[in-house]
Amino acid sequence: MVTGANEGIGFQIVERLALEGLIVVLCCRDECRGFHATEDLHAKGLKNVIFRRLDIRSPESRSDFIDWINQTYGGLDILINNATAFFYDNEAEHALETINTNYHGPVSFTESLLPFFKPSTAGARIVNISSLQGQLINVNDVGLRQQLVDPSSFDVDFINSWAMITRKPVRPATEWRWATEVLHITSPKSFSTPTPASYHCE
Ligand SMILES: NC(=O)c1ccc[n+]([C@@H]2O[C@H](COP(=O)([O-])OP(=O)(O)OC[C@H]3O[C@@H](n4cnc5c(N)ncnc54)[C@H](OP(=O)(O)O)[C@@H]3O)[C@@H](O)[C@H]2O)c1
Image 1: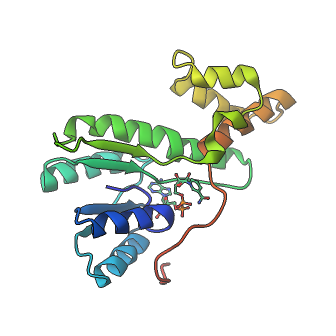
Image 2: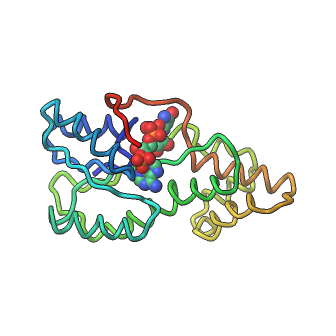
């Protein structure tokens, strides 16, 4: 299964895996765009692509998906965490959306799916799509960088604390800069990527 796969890199991954003969579940939030992206692949003869809606931020949607994949396939072999939220501004609302889509959602989803990976001679796989822009070297502050590589200080509360800073009406310059850096490493994106054939969705 590939998250965030109605366009961009996720869509291309689905196509390549389907060409290898795997059954691939193409996931995204938007039913219409997901449906049309899947139709595009079916039209190329890749009937082994199946669409299933998944909003990686939503506990209900994640739980529905896990029930469905277990009932339908008895588990899974490969999870590709590709879905992403990206914004060019530093609005508080967008900061939280970024943290929820790019961090909390995939972490919770992956943890919940772990018991359902099938034993495989090739080895079950979890692939997390990242970016050169997400490298820690891009975090200028040495103290913050050390916190980000230290598993004992890097937890959910730590990430949340940086997202919350963006909500403060008055932010000390240092706090603001650090919060922005954390957002950048969780929100890597620099260019638009190939999309399926164009179609119209409301
Ligand atoms: N493009 C680049 O420059 C670049 C460079 C390096 C690495 N990357 C990484 O590659 C990955 C894909 O990037 P991309 O540029 O191909 O992305 P993209 O074209 O913007 O596509 C993002 C996908 O994520 C889905 N999505 C967004 N929010 C979601 C949610 N809450 N739940 C489920 N799906 C959600 C979107 O579909 P819906 O809106 O329908 O949900 C869409 O399919 C990302 O992890 C990115 O960091 C990108």
